[in-house]
Amino acid sequence: MKVVANIVKMLADKGISQAELSRRTEMDTATISKIFSGQTRLNVNALSEISTAIGVPVVDIITYPDRYVCLNAGEAEPLEAILQIRLKKDKKDQVMKLIFGEHCLEILNK
Image (tube, helix red, strand yellow):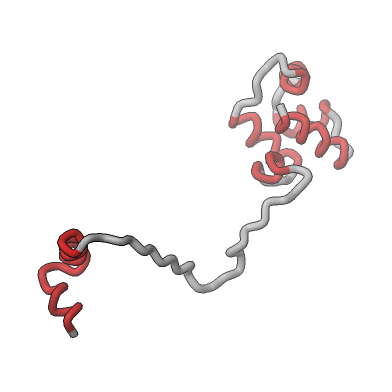
């Protein structure tokens, strides 16, 4: 229900009435009223239509009043991740052969 409450607040902030939302989404006002009152569940398609109609991403409706901020936005370089796994020697050798093929021992010994 928090998502519906967020939509209602966002519409009020933007000065958009239910009738205007109905016009923008091509959903009838009765359906919108039922969604807002909790008589009908908000489905993903309706949420997507509403987000488009009010000009905000779905994630911003979900996180309202906060806005979603992608921490990697604008980074030109790919994100690098390092995974460390502790293995016994026999398992380590198996994993290294899987990753590097049969020549992994030659690579490790250099």
